[in-house]
Length: 75
Image (cartoon, rainbow, N blue to C red):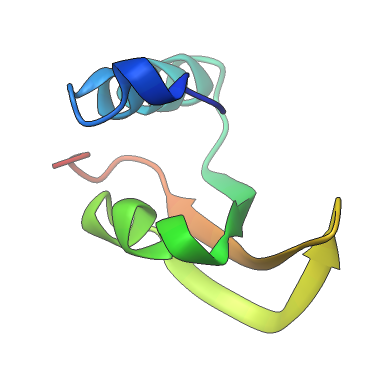
């Protein structure tokens, strides 16, 4: 997921992720995972994602895997 810098801090990322989680739950998916850039791990933690595994490089940037069980409130 990416939000252009000019549109950040307006709740757009949260709404996009909330919609994606709803669609995943409706499709019967019970757990979702993503690779988060380290500077935004806290953003995903606020939405109840939990980090796991080691930090790794992707596209030259440090990332951390995160996962969340569905069926929980998003906020």
